[in-house]
Image (cartoon, rainbow, N blue to C red; front, side, top):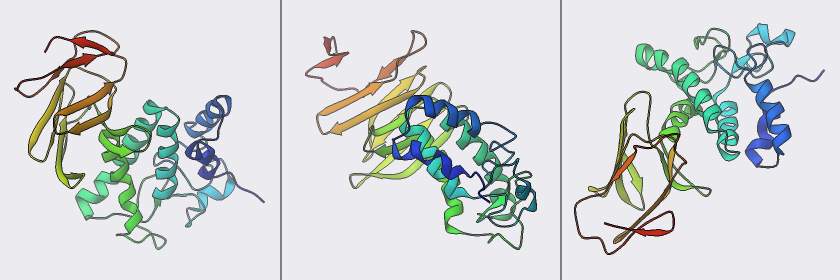
Length: 239
């Protein structure tokens, strides 16, 4: 018989799911009786009788399935849902890494426990979970270019990223985000929400877009210097 698995969400990853189908997929994705278990997502729906076997593909959580689904959520603009998934997965991953230096191949979807004859304790794709968390804070892709979170619930620091061969540093918390490339400060963002997208830094040119803000009061602070021109929303602004 056929079992329902997280691969059902892959049309979002491919960018071919129409909006009405996306809403239906989200309903299944975040249903705690189906896929949003303690350690989402089980390889087969939690309400499948075989899921309780907790044997390899019969009910365990596999990082590649989550990573592909996370990519689909972001591609289709479901940023809040993508963050919710990445955050829960990181909460499952972190204790094993902190206490055992473990990066499990798969974990029990109902308890988050990785130790099992069916799970290698240090497996390459286990690192897709913390990678999801990094990408929630800063990423480069074809859709949005270099883009980053304008705020974070918990402080996040990336010290040794690479961007066009130069060292990239990014730090963000609930009040401020700071970006530097090649040792040069690019900008600081204060009291913003959402993401800063399409970040371009090409010597004398700096450009980016900011998600619509729920309220006024946010700031973008640029490094000290002389600016030939500053444009906001397509209109020239005073330096």
